[in-house]
Amino acid sequence: MSTTADSTINIRAPRSARALIDKAAKVLGRNRSEFVLEVAQERAREVLLDRTHFALSEDQHRRFLRALDKPLPKQSAEALKRLLARKAPWER
Image (cartoon, rainbow, N blue to C red; front, side, top):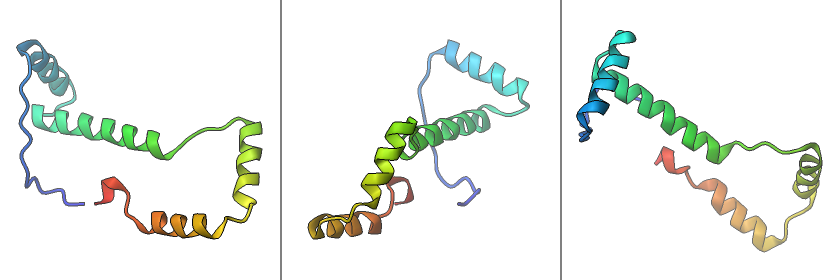
């Protein structure tokens, strides 16, 4: 991933939000852009991880493993191959 800033993101915000962001950025020794970009990226990762990682109870985990061990019908196997060949939305 490139660290060179080559794209612009513009947002409009109430003065009170801008003041709050500026105050927090100053506390961390960052400028507004650095702070907003860092926080937005952290939140974006959280959102995406929430879609890719999940927790199960012990019973759910056992049932999940049993389901994984069952052979797939041919039609499902082909659909799974196509799905796994696609890039995730955040990789496109």
